[in-house]
Length: 339
Ligand code: WQD
Image 1 (cartoon, rainbow, N blue to C red):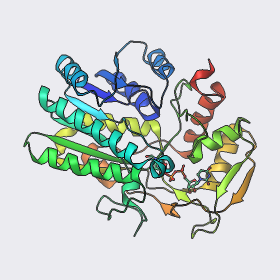
Image 2 (tube, rainbow, N blue to C red):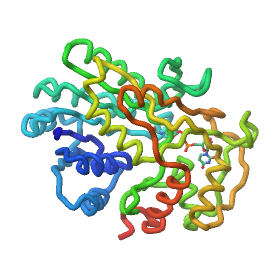
Image 3 (cartoon, protein in one colour):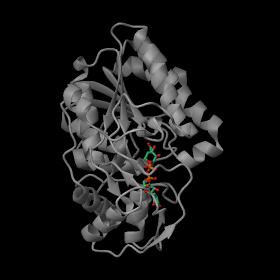
Image 4 (cartoon, protein in one colour):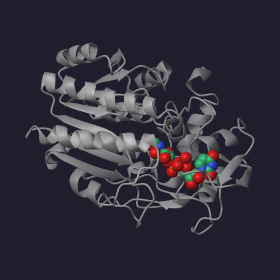
């Protein structure tokens, strides 16, 4: 049993990690200020796990408060998910993204040093790689983030590298997510974007539920089998299991390391649309539109390093991603604030 602080725990990824952590008998303290999530998501988690857990509504940049709560909770691990994550918004508001994402991480690291917590697991992103120079992407691929969101992830990885180097017993595990989608089998927790979804899966879900009129397919002239963008979609429950695998196998990590979390499989926009239609039994009208600024044609991952170091690989398939997403969407047509 480990004591885990989960920052940003009320979010899409965080709620699924709380469920997995408690299912594996770990103690959690969730810290979230609901800037991009709902308290109702935590109520739904409690329904799934059938128990309460420690929670703190706080801004991670409030160093005094964070240090104090770490002294009291005495964490063995921190899973650091909190951060602003909209690519488009990061281009419009770069200073906000650098300030929030980097200062909150520094506050966490100071609180960890103050209470002797030595292991941080960081929510990084495949966006750090930029335009793939080869596929599948492995962790040795060059970096080339094209937006402040992705750059903030890379800057934080570098900060963690220096933090881990300064203390022989410190470990920093950067998990580079590809495209997390789907929902818990109960349909009680899932992805609930705050306004118009930027990402494909939640947008398709809202077209299926009738909330959006049609899907805009951003370009069909990429060098892919059907011309539409190809990505490595990973079930959020597989992603959650990978985080707990990182907690339970941290002895395999020396100092700082980065690990891709993907499925070694790429699916196109039209393949997602068709799979979602099959699993929801709903029509998904779509229109081919011009390419979206900053998109790459194809991107998918190897997961050899995750298998070796974490003993983890993705288990769930595209049908499960679509059916679980649809179960949450159909129960919550307007997200958590529905009920
Ligand atoms: C996937 C594909 C689009 C919406 C982003 C972030 C990344 C991570 C995951 C945080 C692309 C196409 C999309 C739509 C479409 N987020 N698309 N119509 O861009 O691979 O990655 O989200 O960590 O950091 O960059 O995901 O879901 O936005 O797009 O055709 O309405 O779907 O062109 O090919 P992306 P996405």
